[in-house]
Length: 208
Image (cartoon, rainbow, N blue to C red):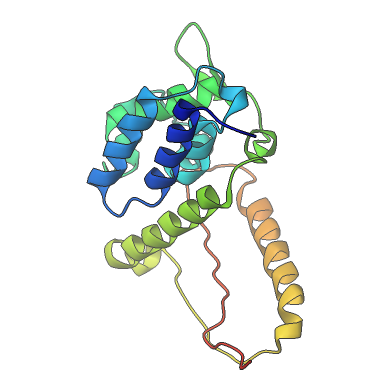
């Protein structure tokens, strides 16, 4: 498909936003993207969809809605994030979730989940968004290691030799564990939002 100059520039800026190395660069490219948002979003990659996954706090806000004391207040949400995300960013994220049809706001200003399954919203996202999300969550794990007490977190690692042929089996076991842990811990009486990261990767490279 041949794109015109404006959508081409939009996609170029989107790639630059994804590859930004600093918060200053991220904010600059985001400002440029918002100004070039295509009028027919269904014809081009949606920045809203990209940011839903690429910026970690969107998913965290969705999970936070399940907390019994949740407030639709950017200031309150920011405080629950230890003020690491400013209220203005929180407000923009909520508007984005509403535009995507994932949450809805009633006349009283209360918000609730409208679509429990976001796969239909994100199944056409590029791998860059997924990688950006995982990178951010790995960074959040580093923050937790430095800032949270041992009683608030569990961070452990293990290094061992394996047969590369067993990697698919390891992936299945890890995914099963993730599903089982979430099912057990999400049964009710939730008062915090936690992130489970599992990284399983090669430290060596096979000889060619």
